[in-house]
Image (cartoon, rainbow, N blue to C red; front, side, top):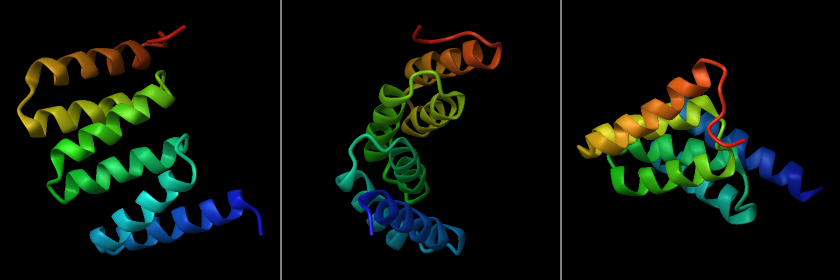
Length: 112
């Protein structure tokens, strides 16, 4: 079995745990995904959102930043990062992330 298949299986398992509210299990599996492939955008994004649901806001922001670094023109990644900053009470950063999401939603690019 290939590493890509293993990664996708882990990610699917994590999503299953997330879907039924088993956040700790989902986080553990998402962490394994990004350990296997540090460039796995979907893994970083999902890990950040699961951590946010657990109230681990600072770590969630780190994952959100990793997501936008990997895919700087992803609308959902910027929107999620903005939500993370709002939860952290960092309104200037939340507004900046929201601004990038707005640029993308209008068909622009954050990074050419």
